[in-house]
Amino acid sequence: MNEQVNDCWKPSWVKALTAAIEEVEDEEDEHIFTAKGRCRELWIQSL
Image 1: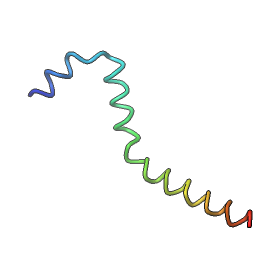
Image 2: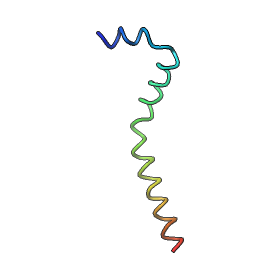
Image 3: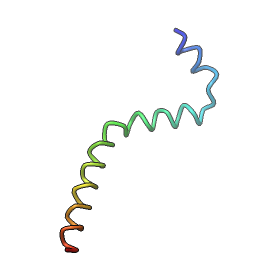
Image 4: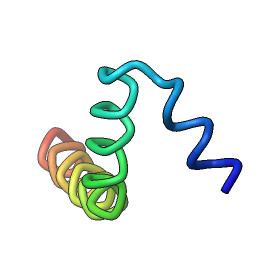
């Protein structure tokens, strides 16, 4: 209930940003893992 009251006072851009963060939050680990792997491959190629 308290969370619903707090949402009423948030500006629309805060609500939109929060929704966007929640949408991509699950994908974050996958992107980090992929980027780390790619960096490792590039590092090995540079040796």
